[in-house]
Length: 193
Image (tube, rainbow, N blue to C red; front, side):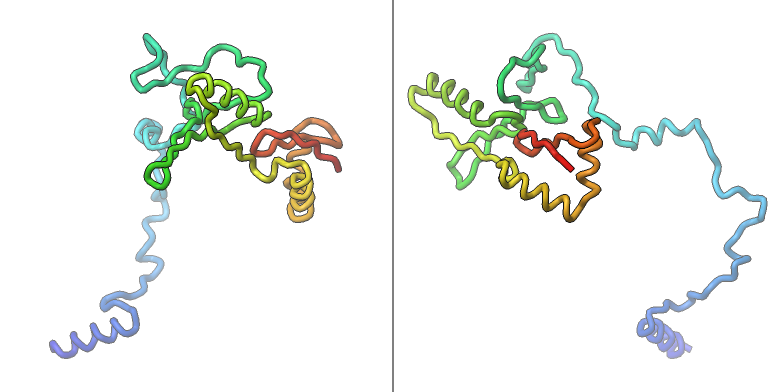
């Protein structure tokens, strides 16, 4: 008897079918025909709402005094009329980051710059040189797509491979034949069909 059980378990191991597993008839798996498949209840939906992520980032709460202990300040009124603009992140923070590489190389990185990034570099250099007494080492990185010649090459490539993507941009501007596409560094390129 024990040998037969052992042989059956080995057979199941070789074939991948577990002993005692069999198919069921459809009548064994279904309930009575008038039994509902689910029950809709609105009373317990508040428990489900806690699990769902919010659809948008909420506005930051009002504080008694600024800056807060974490150093956060709300944006001031209207932005000044400058050729560049640094957009806040979706969490309402200024996108200025400290990057440490090779153990002792510290860099400050400013991201989400829109407009003339070289004007921002000049203003930062002027501000820091007055504080430090010497000119700081700065580097401006612009994505290769922001150069007009490469941008047009890339747009032509997109137009060939994904023509519907170009249609979305041209229709979103509200004009019939032209539209505007903003690249990563804020350069605005006209699109023509």
